Amino acid sequence: MPFFTSVLNQFPEHSLKVRTINQSRQRQCFIVHRKPQAPQWQEENAHEIKNDEISRVIETPEGYIVKYIKQRTWHDNLRIFWGASKISAELRSCIFLQNLGLRVPAVLEYGMAFIPGHLWGVTGYYLMEKHPAADIVKHHFHHCDQPARQKILAQLVHDLQRLRDARCVYRDLSFRNMMTDDEGELFWIDTNIRRYAKANQKFIADWNKTLKVLLQELSTMSESAEHDGLRAIQDLML
Image 1 (cartoon, helix red, strand yellow):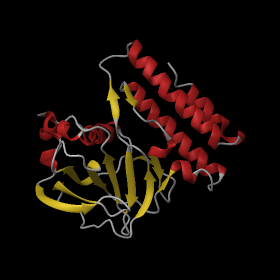
Image 2 (spheres, one colour; image 1 turned 120 degrees about the vertical axis):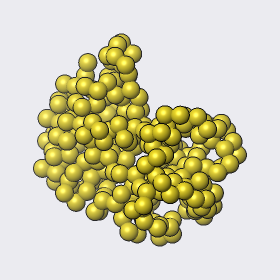
Image 3 (cartoon, helix red, strand yellow; image 1 turned 30 degrees about the horizontal axis):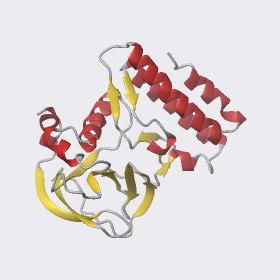
Image 4 (cartoon, helix red, strand yellow; image 1 turned 180 degrees about the vertical axis):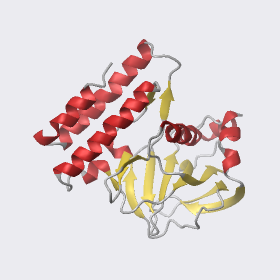
């Protein structure tokens, strides 16, 4: 299977682990795959960065980022068997985006739900390398100055150009799925993308649709000083 050949062989350490998956202290068993440099970590005392109907993102006390993929339908876990689950797709996309030159945190560990088909809270999780004082861009915009916002938008436009040239559409293109560090560097924490074989009408329609959503979101976050960023994103429309 492509997933197991492209991803699994990068994680040579395997085990079964029970982890706490939410603030209610619900526990779940996972088949865990780790790289040798992966740290030992616990859910306890972690800072919650994001929590919605699709995923939950936390930062451990040591600064590592963990993303849990929530189960949305009863058959989500069954897709694990043929590498078609959301977590499988995000791990593949992570490698692809890194090859494109986008800043995506390296994945050090991931876990798949141990009993596919059972109504667990999440289908899996993955642990990303740590970044100093990471913050969601949508939050960061509210307390950073104009030069910092312009720097983030310039990086965003550059990354979007790479995605467009590679015929890739972000499934959930949102400032909630981007983070920035102490240096103002942009990186992506939601790597679920769709790739297209050619720039056909379907690609163009999906690409423009996601940009329109992003522009609407940016219009509620930015001041007049960020109009250059708005125009630069608008220029990427097809």
